[in-house]
Length: 351
Ligand SMILES: *Cc1c(COP(=O)(O)O)cnc(C)c1O
Image 1: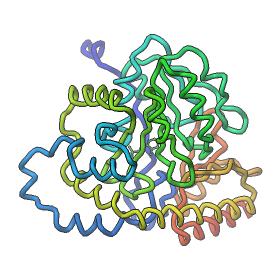
Image 2: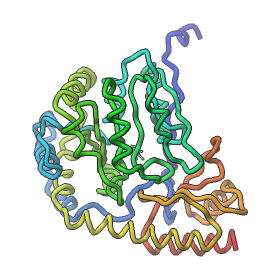
Image 3: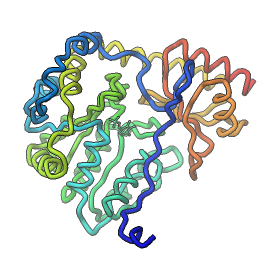
């Protein structure tokens, strides 16, 4: 068809499967197995549908913005809120990666980065992680059009120490460096304190993992006001009202319940530490994880086979048929009961 010549053709990102059938143990999309803070359910029960006829407030003027700014000790002018961090990151690609030089990111990383680069026509180079899945510093000290990496990295769970993060930011003062901290609350140290020192640093976080609100779609970026202004200019040139009223209201209850948040993260870390022991006992090897998942490879049985056998047992994990990582499974940390079911199934498969 002739019109296809004028179509912007892309190969989209493929998220992990959301099974329709009941009873599946879902360890495949890094969702939190625990419910959001109790205040979220309460606030949701008293949502006033009458208000929905109005447009929402501008995100940066909402209670959610104020609650986040207070929680992270920044000004609301240092905060950008979006529809999950995918929206925030996509806007950040569109805003900050506008150079003829390639944007740098790791070869093994969040598989949305090359999709955004492709859809926006941004040149990029994937920099190979070393054998231990660590970033090679020298790779990020060459001329580039911007840098992005998750910390901890996905899907490896490997954490880069803050001094190395700072080294990358400091070595790239002429471009924007984005640190995607989707998993930072599970034991990492955030780069947030560095935003005062570096005007080229954008730190991105999300409610989807540590705050158990993937379905509500809330993400945010933090950086100096100039960065945030540029982000807002682009966002308001695409869609002024991205955040819906319900998400803006319910997010507040999640941010304000610090005790629940802390307890929930600690619980996942404890289950993860136990899972590392249990998986090691069963012949798996993996880098130490600082996220709510473990990236594990079995020493004898191919990952694809374990993936398929687990699926037959209604236990879903993530496996990619991709170079360098096709013998690994990414296993999300579930509840202790879910993990016990996983270990029993692995005893059958690997035992
Ligand atoms: C989950 C994830 C995100 C985005 O999640 P949202 O639900 O859009 O907030 C971003 N980056 C990485 C590395 C992730 O794993």
